[in-house]
Length: 77
Image (cartoon, rainbow, N blue to C red; front, side, top):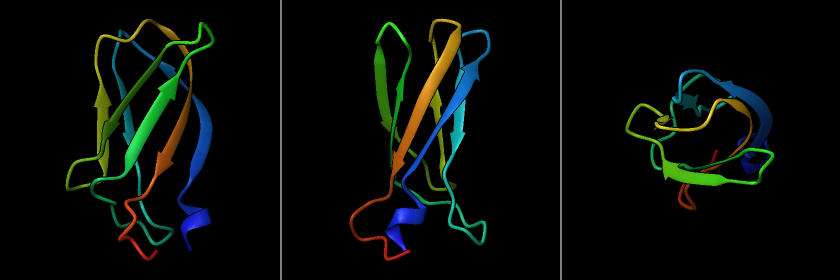
């Protein structure tokens, strides 16, 4: 179910690095999911998850971030 994988929540970045894990409801990491992070300024950064479903954003200003993860179009979960 794709709707279960499109996620939005707020995270706090510490010391300029934010790590986001994207996984299926049963815990498997989703590779190549697009991840977008936005702070209140608004400043945005985007990237893709690695093979284990993890995306890392370095050199971000400290603060609160809204996170959205979108699975690849070929992911049927």
